[in-house]
Length: 197
Image (cartoon, rainbow, N blue to C red; front, side, top):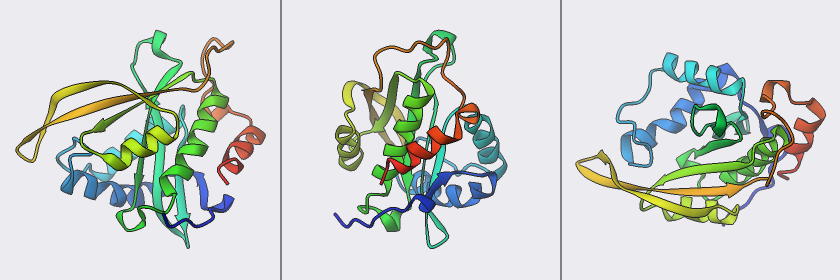
């Protein structure tokens, strides 16, 4: 695997101005693969709305190289009912010209540190099958497969399974609810971002 040291300034919270670059990374996953079950590229306004809704509560990170966004990762609600509030789902997308360079791993490492600091206990990820690269990155971070939804998605004139993975961040939380990312102490945020290096 080709690895390049990731600097702190390369990894940061996403901003609204990053939405077009992130959408450009996401588009090939929609158009050319079944990794995403979306069948049309979202409109920029729709993507911006999703970003705004999620990034107030959950971390949404981008990784840049030479001023170009080459990957992003975020967390979102696992389910809407309040009893699920200590669980979340995660996604990571890397520009197709930068696979195999540790981009996804750097993003995930910082993302999980932030989620743990917020007070989340369980993280889930759904992966369309087959996807050996995604299986490997989730396995390397301690995710375990917990079940498969068989033939749940129909795209490109074929049925696709989705395997679900679970990672335990912490066993118990003493808080009534996780801390929104927008209210997490900046020193803690800096420590989490530095920890990916």
